[in-house]
Amino acid sequence: MHLRRHRYQDILLVPAAEEDDSDGWGRGVRYTVAAGNEDLSGRAEQGRANTAASAGLAAGRVEGPARTRWNTVDLLYTDPDGYQVVLSQPVTEASVGSEWSELVRHSARP
Image (cartoon, rainbow, N blue to C red; front, side, top):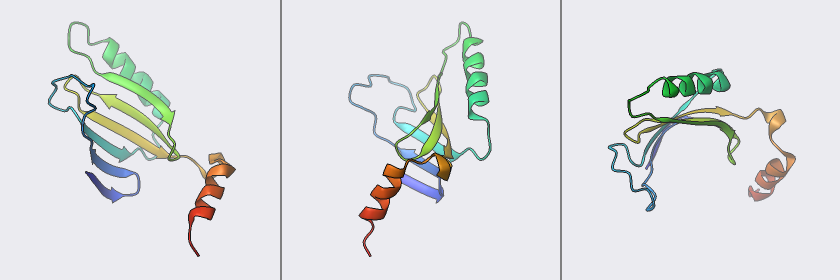
């Protein structure tokens, strides 16, 4: 299920992959929000430092920031129960490849 409030501010409920054998409460739940002007690289470093500092406790994961196929840069946090939070920023127009722009132009009907 995909619920959208604003562009890049989504709640996604995604079925867990069959190979995911975790039994966490949040299995398959992903919450995506617009990150605004956040420094995603700095947030990732902070998240990794917090994860490393949780010695003896169940730790989460931090992935990214990474560019996606849909022209965003996403930072993914997964907590020990399997819940996922994504901070997402759109890629600037100048960074979007011309191939993508051409695909969109040619796929639109007049």
